[in-house]
Structures are given as structure tokens and as C-alpha cells.
Amino acid sequence: MLRFSGEMKQLLLATLMALVSLTIANVAHAEGFGPDIGINESVQSETYVGHVGQLDAIFYLKWFPTLEGRGGEISGTYFYPKRSNRSYDLMGNNFQEGQVYLEESTDGELTARIRLTKYVIANKIVWSGIMQNTDGRRFEISFQRDQ
Image (cartoon, rainbow, N blue to C red; front, side):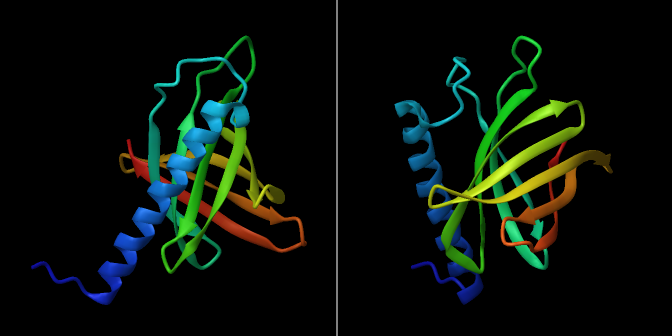
């Protein structure tokens, strides 16, 4: 029988919750609730790790191709491993090379606007910027993955 530390159990539970959230998001997208860009559904989700303010976060993002002069659409979700009972939806676009605009929603309500800039540092793709919550709070946000 496998034994896991309390921290590992939390991480496994958080990952499971994120997978369930992604499954729900994929079903919602298939039912017409995701980006309406009419492209191949085989776009793979990219996993990023980072933080929002002082909290560690795990992000799952789908980057859809640029179409007819528009920036590529982005959809996804993120959660805090230490607060794994809730995930946050993200929708937005890559309106300019190296620039991203996202809107965060919680339970269908807009809760934050996020502007990010891309950096490539030591073979990592890093997105970094500011999250402006609709209640006036501001947080530094960044996330990264291997290139």
C-alpha cells in the first residue's frame, strides 16, 4: 500500500480537482460555452506553475491559433493547491505577440482582469504581470513552463 505525506495528499487532491474542473470546462466548451472561434478541438492544454500574490497556483491554459488578424484566444482555469476546493476560469486573448489579456471569472461572474507580458528565461516561458480584481485589490501574477 502506498503512503503519502499530508502535503502530497493535498497536492494529489488538488490535481484531481483541477482535472475535474478541466473536464467540466471541456464539456462546457463542447456545448458552446467556450471561445467561439470554430477551430479544431484537439488543442492541448498547457500546464504552468506560478503564483498570484503570495499564493502558489497551478494554471491550465489552452492557446488557440490566431485567426483572421485577431489575437489567438485563450481559455483555461487555475487553482491554489492549498485551497483546492475552488478553481477560477480564465478567458482572453494573445492580442499582440508577447502580450496577453485575461479575464478571471468565479461562478460565472467577472472577478479580475489580468495583463501579462511574456519572457523567456533559462529555457522557461514566463508570463508575468498584474491582476486587478473587480473589488479593487491588485496582485502580482506570474506563471511558467518549460520551453
